[in-house]
Length: 149
Image 1 (tube, rainbow, N blue to C red):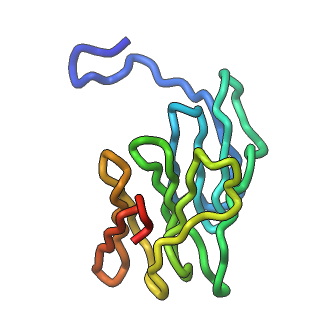
Image 2 (spheres, rainbow, N blue to C red):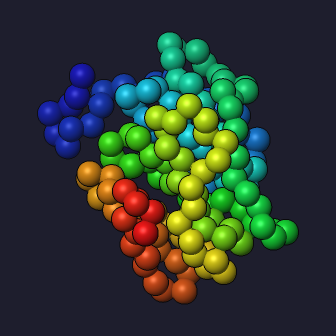
């Protein structure tokens, strides 16, 4: 239940603890497929959320993300509002990676080019057709992800 003031829950209970293994810099949750995504220097991991188990030691899978230079790492990830695409960006990568979560093979993400920039934030419009990425140089790039332009 919820308290009448401020809409705060009466009780908070830990349901899961995911062992990512490195610093977790961003998370995304797909409530439709019951998956969680954890993102950090150790990569992008996919977790199946089910039942009320207390701890998940091993991820369901790791999503491939190409490293171009030493010191490159993922720092942010975001799920499109429609739950069909996952975006991930970071430092030292040649682009923002995009995974089509409905595809049978998640090993080859598409890339939104941004060579030499450090991605700090990601967002998408409600339809999931436009992707926005904010960079450390003070710019925001916008892509139409329907045709990857």
